[in-house]
Length: 50
Image 1 (spheres, rainbow, N blue to C red):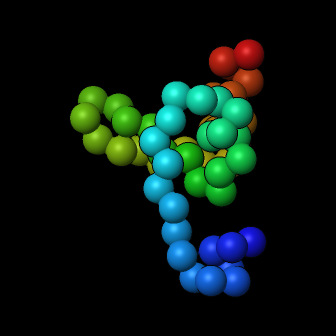
Image 2: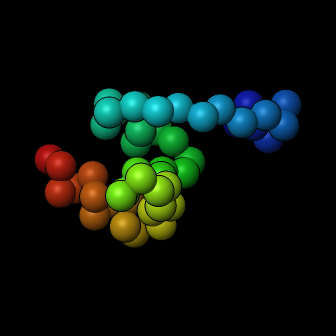
């Protein structure tokens, strides 16, 4: 909501699943490179962590 209203972005690096689940976009560090997870892939990732 803030991003739309004020046109800003926030980069958050965390190992905290609860914080990450609230993000609009999730990227993973794999072999030293960032890889974006699609919505379905992110759900599978979080479900696998439970």
